[in-house]
Each structure stands twice: as structure tokens, then as C-alpha cells.
Length: 364
Image (tube, rainbow, N blue to C red; front, side, top):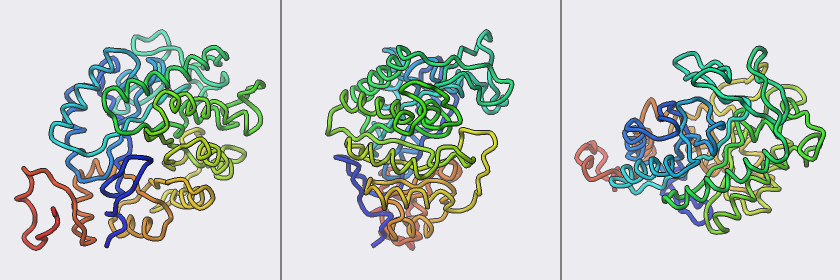
């Protein structure tokens, strides 16, 4: 029996296997609304045989988008477009689908990656005023972010809750809160971006306050039975920044509050980060959080081979693995992994006849 292809529960949601499709921005939305690209892209991934598909970072307010091409879930129009996309994907796939709710903070208002990805001035037609815990830009020369007032913090917390309500209403199976990669929640957590002298800055308890308030507001909105998790950067990869010790403490607090899973990435906050990129380079972070908190943990980052993924789940370093760029490159990665590991995977009826003659039980 393959551990990778054994069931996994995220709260009350049971997955067929432990392969997660990580959120990947497509920068192809129209004023926050999903388009035909998303129907095609997500429909393709929903035929991959993975256990869970998490759609891209979806902003809880227009100013929370990374770029002007980002998906949002902040009003009736964006909700209707996501509902339409979700229905299109679901018409041919029963794969569980989660949404990642996000706010980019000081890393918002950018060009699309293929146009350079640089920051856009607030007075540009595709730009807006960015916000952050403190008035510190991500890069020297970027527009100065507006330091958030306590009233604006409360508004953003409420925006997460409202977006969560919309996500449940249109039928998503789970919610992942985006606390990673240098975006707003991570900005509050890291002392490099957070220089506040009020109850949202300074001590670890204070820097965690925003993330916990967002989680509590979302949990209060969706109830105790709906799966809610978080994605974090376990390290800034710079001295005196956010690190694995603090990540463990955050995970402990969130687990006590009923958080169902933690998706462990790293980096994205500081331009001087020094990341030792290589196979499994982030897995030790997931391993430590799992061992010290017991929270269901997803490992991600240069996990490319079936045997590699199997070893991570078999040894208990993480409960699941996530794929991002790797599954864009090979959208049938779970099929190929199941073939390698002697496991079974679900395929649509229309694809059953492509099962290799030597793998009579690949599709069950």
C-alpha cells in the first residue's frame, strides 16, 4: 500500500490521496473576475487525480490583489464569476476544491510577471495605494505603503470573514488563509516588515495578533465543521526575521483554536533572503511543525519525484505533499506517480481507455 495514495482528512473533509495542488496565480482575471482561462486551467487540473485542488490566491478586497490580473472574492460580481467557474469544473470532476483567501499588502499593485512584475505607482491606471503594517516598501524605490490604522486592520479582518462566507456559499470544500510569501499576514508576522509600536507589533504575541484575528473571524463565519487551514512561510531566510521557532508557536496557537491544517512554505518577505534551494529543502520545516504541534501538515517545494513524495508521507515528515510548478509542467503527475508506486488513481470515464495495457488497475 502506498502512503501517498492513502486517504487523508482535513477536518471533516476526506481526500482520496495526499497529493495537493498548491495555489498558483494565473494573472488572468478581469477586474477580479475569473475568465475562460480559469475554467480551462482549473478544469484541466481537476482531471489530474490529485486529492485536493486549491485555487489561486483570491483577494478579499481590490487593494489586496498582487496584480490587476488577480482573482478576487469581495463582492457579488466576483462571487458570481467564481461560482460560474466552480460549476464548470465540478460538472466533470468531483475532486474537492479549496480556495486560498489573501491580501498582498505592500506587495500589491504590480505588473503581471510576463510584463516584468514590478511595482506600479498608485496614479497608474492599473495601480493603487498599497498598505502594510508599517510604511516600509518591499524594495527600495517601490511606492511607500500606507501604514494601516487600527480601523483599517479591522476592516480587512472583516473582509476575510465576508469572503469566507461567499466561499462557503458557492460550494468550496475548504479555505486556506494566505500567511506566506511576504504578503500582508506574513508582513505582520515578520519583524523586518512590522515596526509597529502598538498591540500589532513588537512581541511575538503582538505580531501574531492579525493572523489570529483573521483566523478567528473566518472560523466564526464558517463554523467549527468547515475545514480552515493556513499557508505560512516558515522562515524569512534572513537574520532576525520570522523563523521556524516562531512558526511553531503560531501553529500551536492556531491548533488550539481548531485550525485544520498548515501548508508550510518559506521566503518571499525580504529581498536579501538566502534560500538553499534543493529537493525537499522546506520539508524539515513541515516535519518540525508536525512533530511539535500534531497539526495536519502539508510539505511543498521541489518535490518532483513519486518516490520522494512517498518517502515524505511514509516517514511522517508531513501528512501530505503539495505540487505547484511541477503539476503545471506535468498535469497528470498523480497518474504517473500512481503508476510508479503501484497505486490506483481516479480518472474520468472519457480517459479510461488511455490506461496503459501493462497497468490494468491504474484507474481502479
